[in-house]
Image (cartoon, helix red, strand yellow):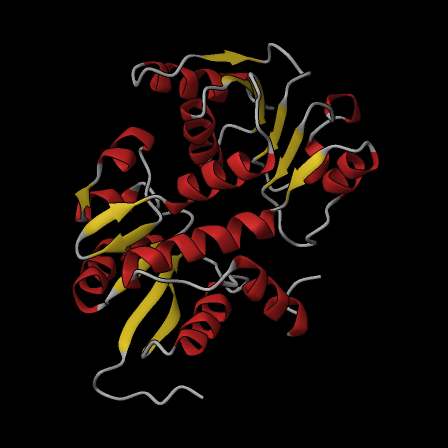
Length: 260
């Protein structure tokens, strides 16, 4: 049981409409397991109040995570590291600097799961797709985007081309790596479930319909819970220089019936 005192460090996640977030459960379990005197809260902030409240949170907290819809808005309040300047979004703050551990998580998980790949197709062109695009591009993948609204995909492609990443729009379904960055795992058509690796950002349920279909074809997978936990542990390394093993956190979440 955490004993809160004047030395207890305050951390948390900032977002809007985030009662679902698993971040407090993940980090408070990790802090307690590692003997770190810290507490992690969820700060659910309305858009109209964001600027005023967030400015104060950056000053009084030891570290922060940032989730939807503020990953871009938060950038103006921190010193921008090179990677978040490129990505255009952050999700972690420490000592006034912004980081993107979504990028680190995807890059490391993909590197662990497959040895070689050339083509990557990402379904969705929203904020979640950015970290995946940069991580995969930096690993040498040729990127294609398939999105329900072609104009949105073209806007993202034009923006990223200025940063040195060329993206094809709706060009191919078959690829070495298939990524679903949308909230709907059924958005990826069955005929597109192929290649060496399938990634689904959705983490409830952990084994989504997309993950099930990929595994039934013998394709390696990365599920949304793996990404969530890995990015959280990468954030703890930034804050405290250490973290738990991913497997220990996942086991805890299942035991508490927080995921299924």
